[in-house]
Length: 311
Ligand code: NDP
Image 1 (cartoon, rainbow, N blue to C red):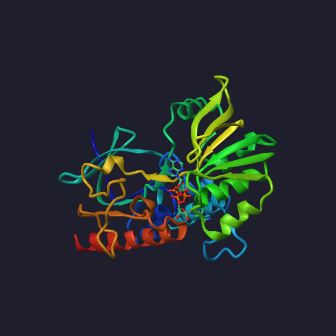
Image 2: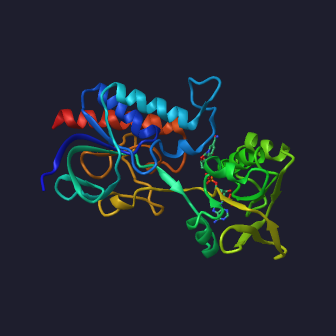
Image 3: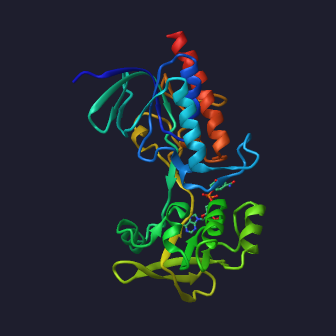
């Protein structure tokens, strides 16, 4: 089968991918961008983005991603639906879309981001897969639990943000925090602590997501200090415990840390493979912000441009 020749391939459609595309398209690099299975990336699962410079009144995550896509398209980015399933960086830069369509690339910018983590309980998996009440996205699924009681696990900014979002829809939100403190920023901590229908249970872990076989009915929790078990009535169980980088397919070829974050050359977006660059959360476990992802997307396009010019 003939492979398609691509000058600059961008994988991913979050702020990193779209920013790389804007720069690459304006530099006449004819970028082709594959959106992946979640067009717009993680920001499509968030409510208001209040910390991205240039939006003094904030903007909703999905809206911002549509604007970024339009901006990338305006300069001629070829934006496609599809999922990169296979990679071969041995001699050339070869990649496959949905296992069949072969791409032969001169340069590749990886902006595949990260995905939500789950606790790993059998019962969690069961009700996640059946759509019976387990979710990692309050903004996507909160609506289904209107006027109901829900439980959310996690103590970071995501958990606080989602708990606050849910508190406006649900009658009660119980937060399960495994330590005796929240990891979230002070402003987010204050926001949840001030909210009347949010109860925070510290030193508490999840033992089981209980249900009637179809839908979730309660969460069995354990106090890590007293070992006391407690069953909390809930129809929704939200998980907000962090993320895992989407880098598995690159593992045989790229240097990564133990979690799977791609290691780039200091002060650049270069990976250990010539012509392959990385931007956004796929390489960033520290900042993980839309603005930093956009910044490294820009860097990756500039690095790729210099690389292509030198070929
Ligand atoms: P974090 O890694 O910051 O927090 C994860 C939370 O989940 C921690 O409280 C952690 O507990 C807990 N946790 C992890 N694993 C488990 C487990 N197995 N069981 C129970 N609890 C667990 O992830 P976030 O997604 O919250 O945030 C990621 C980054 O994005 C951060 O830098 C954050 O600041 C940023 N962010 C910013 C927002 C904003 O500015 N509006 C909104 C959302 C995120 P422990 O503390 O004990 O490790």
